[in-house]
Length: 599
Image (spheres, rainbow, N blue to C red):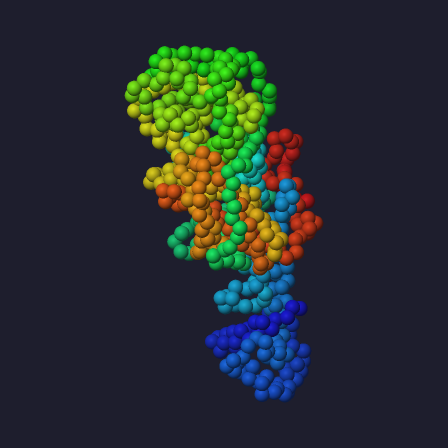
């Protein structure tokens, strides 16, 4: 039995006070040992020194160190409570998992000591998180340990929201970002709740959800008394759980970098499937059959420049490349690509080496843009894209016809044989398999998400939700790290067409922030960051990030990750080892009936 001298004085006062208020003797716990016969009389006959009697009487100036626990009444009863709750704490210890990638996580904090403000101090832990709140069995990742795996293996081909190259982690926050206000992208708005309730409680899945996985409403929700109704547990859990260590004005080592690039294999592609060439690329690309594309498609591909120019022309792509190389106008540079719809925490970003021909050079070959030109439409061969970019992008050389990424000719997924590329704006102007540049004098809203090149997603109130976007990569919920040793977090901050002015971190759930100014940066490259922090107290921590742009815009949404610092790192044998992380059968194993089994 552990030593309890640090809280004995408080326990004695509480027990005595409870007896006076109730006017009765507390009922003996079934698990608490009863005093042996004659024990009480013997204790009454014990001779106490004046100092010991002063401690029992609660004399002013008494400290925990003064207390000899052999000299207070009711010790046996309290010992029984401690033993009872020690047993419960062991039985309901938070689950530690080893994920398929080898990372260990503990989604629910350990209560290393009772909250000092708690009135009912019965033991070193009262297992509030696990025994009372059942937190290990709540939230999406209680069943789906890796939501990336769920999306990858859906029967319905979900757009590629994950980014394995950058180790992005899909969370409920990201799901809600897309499945909410998304006019023109999702046909039915605000349908996330409808979808989830139907998927889990509909005819096909309700039996598994309620019986096999013992799911119910509280698996996903948190019911409150404050008028908030049914909250989503994953969005509110960090304010509900005990045992999170708050660090005021957190201090760490912050670094930034803009040189890190991805090879073509790591360049993200959402793989939208709403047009002929979209489907072709998905089926032939890395997320489909991963086929080699025919050389003839490259050799016979044509580029047309028409519209508000001196003279329309059409030329084969290989001929244009050869001519541009001879003229010395081919551009090789590092450039970013960011999707307009990339949520906070999302992986829809890229920093890569591109090789391409300036669209301005192609327009000059057509006799140049005539007066009144407002921009250029980038048209795909199947007619499915009519996005346009403003003339200032043309004049600044920020629009390119790209035919190589990372020094390699494009593969099917990245738009073989060529793609449009415009810097500092929404990636959807980067029309894959572009075949026509239509110079236009139309009055186009170049900030519109359909016609132009918007910079960030706006909600119904026209408030940018992901500009700036400050994201943390590589931290699954409850990641276990070594206490007392530095751990380096990583991620990116971006604001499309704006520079980032500062990045801030909080480790007391937004109460205080530590600010790091960004001296200067290239807004056309990704700003990667690392933040190294050394925990000094065993327990759970929450790291939150936000950013501010040069114009003063601050992150509308912030991302928070929880991690656990352990004095002794558990071995895999001491954890629940997950064979797969999704409960959704992997497509490569059609014979599998349940990939959520634990070993």
